[in-house]
Image (cartoon, rainbow, N blue to C red; front, side, top):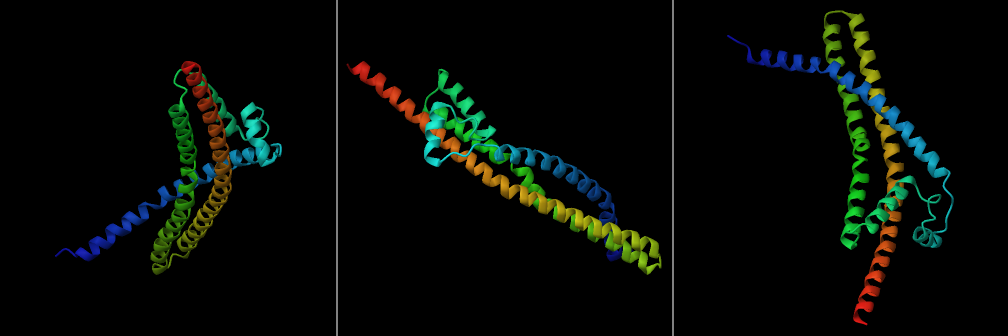
Length: 212
């Protein structure tokens, strides 16, 4: 007679133990990713430190005259360049400008998904990397294999530390970059409002000339 319980336990143990190396591989990959992202983060931080300070009441005039390249970030400058191209095109109406703003905003927020995923998945992978070796370590303890137990404990604790470190770093990067993005979107909306005001004035002038 087949022992269903023992069969299920053996199957779950096999699945659990087979996940160890994929978890370790993912943790190594996430470690490399957070190192690369740290470089880009500090590069943007250095750029923002070098930006000239501008009073809030002077920013609309700088955006209107196009002299804000040293005041706002590269993200806002790229958007303003795309905004000028949209306004100079044949379909440079309010709908095109509004669509450009929404598409740019959506693209910026999508770039934060990787950090948000790291914040959630890295500690989870660290926990998986802790529990899986603990199971095999306890099995080795029952057989008196202390060498296998010590090896599994080392893997368990190091994966926990690695996962928590990646998650903590990703959370810090996410918090700071979220503030940067909110500031950039605010400046983009201001530039869009100034451009929309110019479009309304131009259309009003054309309408007045036609009426006269």
